[in-house]
Image (cartoon, rainbow, N blue to C red):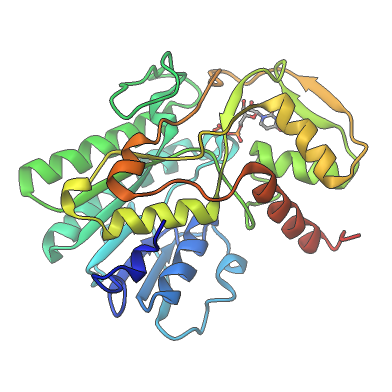
Length: 328
Ligand code: UDP
């Protein structure tokens, strides 16, 4: 698949002013680096609720990069021709600890950024989520599926407000004609996940590297489909560079579905660890199966993941080893 920045149309990001919200987060920091590498001028915004300055330390001081401490729940005025919105706590532990902030970031943040895009005639891309499908009754999940969501459940602060944000993107598009686009990201993992953010990949890797029991919730038969962060960044850039007709919503994920128990065993093996699996209670409303249908992304963005689970996990494990100074 060709890189969207090397097509015959030229590099669509060269010299462009791009606002990345959630720039100091896990995905945001990788996206900023990719945009800078393509010659964009990047204005990163973060409120540092779940993002960290460490994530962007390598970019700070780089030509063309500026980092602003702002909360998108408040109106903001930043000049940009492209806005990519990644600002929101995304791990279940984070968003359940900060439910009001999560709703404000998703809903008020979307409104503020859509109005900013409207004033400036900017293209705006929303990082939505597979969570909008809730605990799906249809497999794999195609974009046409409406989902199965508990509006007052433990995950509602995230999945319902992300659903509302999608509605707002579609509505601002139809009512005001702005170029708003939506990607639904499925379980992204990779270097710079926070060791303590509670997500399954980071938890299992940290536990395996320290020889601790692996905390499998439920019987481990629930499935997820994990997508390496570089593939997600590539998909977001393709969506940003595509024609406006390809606005989405589009699933971005890796259809390699795996049970949580199998993931635990895979990570233990790749870490060369002797950790045992410990089964613990399943959190409320934990989706039973999740797997993206990526036919739309293949057809409209010529996108599909390039990095399989073992490759991505190995790169992620190496990064955690380096961080912890536990490299053997
Ligand atoms: N999970 C687990 N052990 C952990 C953390 C998570 O078994 O230490 C399970 C969780 O119950 C869910 C899956 O792994 O079924 C993915 O959880 P995560 O929080 O990474 O993301 P989700 O897809 O649920 O938003």
